[in-house]
Every structure is written in C-alpha cells, then in structure tokens.
Amino acid sequence: MSQLRPHLTDAGIRTAKQFTLLLLATLIVPVARAAGPTGEIAVPANAQWSDSGITLRIGESFSIKPHGQASARCRDEWGQGTDVPVGPEGTYLVSNAMAAQHYPLAAGAGGPAPCFCLIGRIGNGAPFFVGKALSRRATQSGRLFLGINDFDCHLNTGCFSVEIRTCLPRSLPLRNEDIVLPTARPGRALGGCRVVVFYVD
Image (tube, rainbow, N blue to C red; front, side):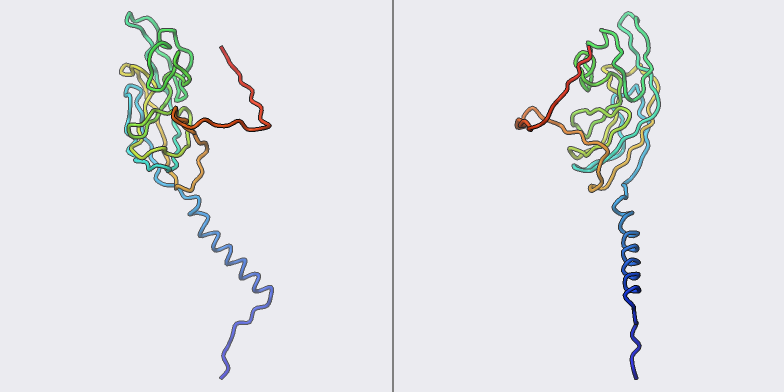
C-alpha cells in the first residue's frame, strides 16, 4: 500500500515559508515591544518627596509623563512676593531672594535646573530633572521617588498627576541622560567637530 505524501510546488513552498515568517513575526513583535507595569500617582507640591510605589533595577528603562499645575509660594519672611503657578517644567522667573536659596537639584543662582520643576530620585541617589517628560535607564537599583524642586515646599498647593511606565531592559528609551561624575576619566577631542555655545544672560 503506497503512502500518501504531501506534494508542494515551488510556489507552494514559497507561500508556506512566507506564512511561517508572518506567524513568527506576529508572535515575536509584541514581545519585543512589550512594556512593563504602568502606574499613575499624584505628586503633591507641598511634599518634598512622594513614593511612586515602583522599584527599579539598575539598567531598567522607565519613562515619566506628568500633567497638571501647582502653585509655588514665593514669599519672604515679611510676606512680600507672590505665589507662582508652575507646570512640571518649573520656571526660571524668580526673584533674587528665591534664586539665592539652596534647592534639592541646583537651581536659581546655583543653576542649571529650573526652580519648582518636577524632579526624581532613585533610592537615596542624587536628584535628577524630570520636567515635562523623561525616559532613561536607571543608574542604580531602588525605589523611585518624585518631588518638586523647592527649598521649602510645605506652603505650596496643587499637585502633578504622573504616569510612570517601566519597560523591558531591551527597550530603547526616548532619551538617555549620561551622568558624568567628578571622578570620571577625562574624554578626548574628536576630529572634524564644531561646537556652538549660546549664552543667555
């Protein structure tokens, strides 16, 4: 008794290969683009740091997207001054008295960050600028905290609504922030490069 064997023409083989590749792409692509947990928290402007509830691993990609508006109290000890409405990007428009203060992330006269902007911190690490949006890799493992860049925030009002997304390690962030430590080895000049520096006073 003869056995029945499938018979495929060259066109049929090509079609089968294309179908197999399409099936593999359907199975693989969503995994490559998959993202981790997403959470949304409220970051009150009158709290120095707010726990996001998310623990990051070193090298893990994450993104932060804030919305909303806060009111920063910009008054001296005599009550002079006004309250400044700010978004998560903060502001550079502050009085000399405000600019002379010491902020968690260097701002005002100590620059370069804006005053009253949204900032972040991983564990007990150094604060970093978040602003309107941030996507980067964690430089250390630890809990993610968010806060407002203010030297005295207890009289502020309002809050930011912040969406936080953690990504798979192979996902590429929208932007990387390279931290250059004082102990880092000096770099070297690259040939054929030109740099234009703008200074606004």
